[in-house]
Length: 232
Ligand code: ZN
Image 1: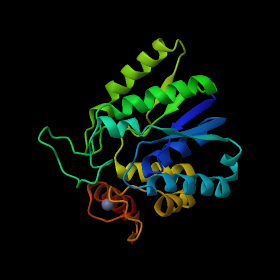
Image 2: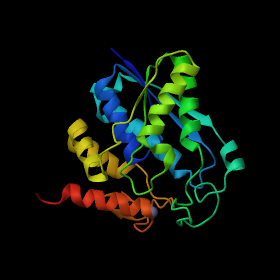
Image 3: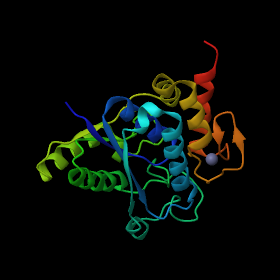
Image 4: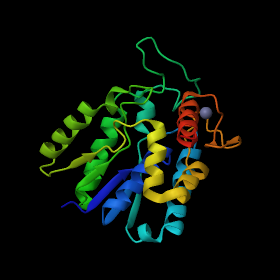
């Protein structure tokens, strides 16, 4: 039986829901994020607020929360030019992928997460990747995750489980999952504290949280929240 987990935690809606799920399942949960020169530091600030508020508002989870790790991955900015790390507008590229796509980013994240998990003796790696998302990032696919689980387990000679609770659900169902896990207080915390907007907008407050309201990440989050809150 697994009891120790590491959550890839960026401070967004998805990874916060994954963190709540891990805290409801496992005895000890650590978190990790990567600093790769995101254009907007708000994302890294958001995650600290989320962690502090979960600790304060969910005493049943507070004792399970272990160390939070922030790994420097500035090298990503050297090998890739995207709208996440440079001052470029979001757009779709010819190959059908958005210019927020950083080739291999998730593969690097998982490899580093596994190295950390190895050292910290954590068996489960939880990540909020999702195939139903609009973006279709190839390094978020279920097959990629299964291949990584195998490669990391073989390559480090330690059995890792990569858990992807959001893989087959949409954004409305992600809100529902949060509600099941932590009720309205968790939904409210996700609305208020988590950050999704590509433009780093923390000025405009909507029913679903802060954001420009127009970038693809905001649109996706807003639509999901609308369907989640729509009367049945
Ligand atoms: Zn936005």
